[in-house]
Length: 213
Length: 213
DNA sequence: CGCGGCTTGGACTGATCAGTACCCGACTGG
DNA sequence: CCAGTCGGGTACTGATCAGTCCAAGCCGCG
Image 1 (cartoon, rainbow over the protein chains, first blue to last red):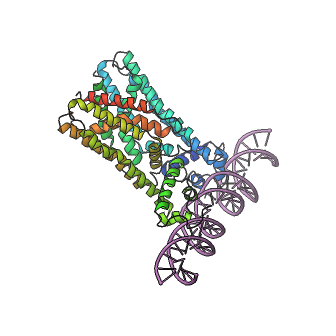
Image 2: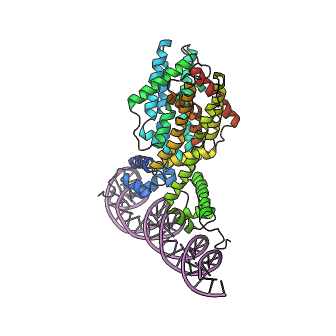
Image 3: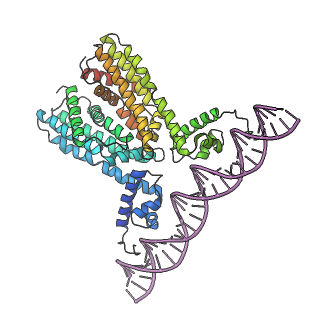
C-alpha cells in the first residue's frame, strides 16, 4: 500500500499518530495485551519508526500517560474563573451546580474511566506514573476546588471552615459511586447526562445544606 | 528436593497451595506478569498439577477471583447484628461509628486495595469477574448497609427517607478518598488506624447532622 | 547534484511463556 | 511380595512478542 518515504519529514506527525494509536489501544486492551506491531500498524507507521521515536515500549507507555495526564488537568484550570462568577450569596448555589455538573460529566466519560483503569491496573509496574496521574488529575483538581471555596469564603459568600476538607467531601460525594461503578462495570452503559446533572444538583444542595447557608 | 509421591493424595492441599500462591502473585505483580511456572514453584507443586487442577491460566484467575470475592462479602454479613445492637436513639451514633470504623479499616488494607487494582485492571479482559466482584463487594455491602438503615428507621431510631441513597452517601463519604488514594499511590503508606477512626467518626457525625437526629 | 539521514517493509533473534508428553516412583489391591 | 495404575516432576513444543538488522527509496541541505 504505502510507498516508502511518502510520510512527511520531521517525525512530528508520525509521533503524533503513534501516540494516539497507542493511547487508543492501551486504553482498550491494556498495556501488556497490546503489541508494538499492532501499535505501529494502527498508526500506519513502521515499527522501526516507533522505536526511533520512543526507544522502547515502556517509554511509549510513559509518553501516553504523560499526554493523558496533561489532558486531565483541563477541568481544574477552568475553576478559578467559574468561582469568580459568583457575585452575591444567591449566586453560590448556581455556580456550584454548574461546576459540579461539568465535573461529573467530565469524569463519567468512557475514556476517562478507561484511563483510570489502565493507570490503576499498571500501578504496580509503573508506580511513578500512577502517582503522577493522581497528583495531576485528583490532587490538582481538589486543590483548585479548595482554592475556589476559599475564594468564596473570603468574599463572604459561603461559610467554610476547612476548604480542603470541604472540597474533598464535595468531590467524593459527587463522583464516588459513579467512578466506582464505571471502573468495575465495563460493559454496562454509563448514567445519562440528565441523570448526572440530577446527581450533581442533589449533591450540591446537600453540600450547601450541611453548612446551612 | 521434593521426593515424588510425598504430597498427600486427593489434590486438595495442592489446590489450596496453588490458590494462595496465585492470589499472592497476581495481587503483587498482576495477571499478565505472573507466569504459571512461578505460581507452581511458589506453591511447591509441579506445573502439571496446576494444569490438572485448573485446566488453564484463565480458570486459575477465575478461581482466585472467586475466592477473593467470597472473602469480600464478610463485612456485609456482620451488619445485621451490628445494627440490631442499637436499642435507643442515643445508641445510634455509637453503633454507626463502630460500623464505619470497621468498614473503613476493612477496606483500607493493602490486600483489599491490591484486589481492586487487579480486578479493575483486568476488567477489560474479564468483565464478568469485575462485575461479580463489584456485585459482591460493593453492591452487596451497600445493600446490607441500606437494610440496616431501614431497620433503624422502622424502629424509629433514625429518620431516613431513602435508605439506599443514604447508605451510598455514607459509604462513599467514608471510603472515597481513602480508596482513591490507595489505588493510585501504591508505594505510599496507608493512613494509620487512628487516622481512619478519626475519619469514620467525622463522617458519621456529618451523616447524622445532615438528617439532624 | 549527490550526500546523509530519514523512512519503509520485512525478515530475523532471543526470550518468555502457556500448555503438553512422557517417565518414574509410590501407593493399592491381591 | 508383585502388578497395575495414578500422580508428580522434567523436559519439550509452539506461539507470541520486544527489539534489531537490512536493503532500498525519498527528501532536504550543502
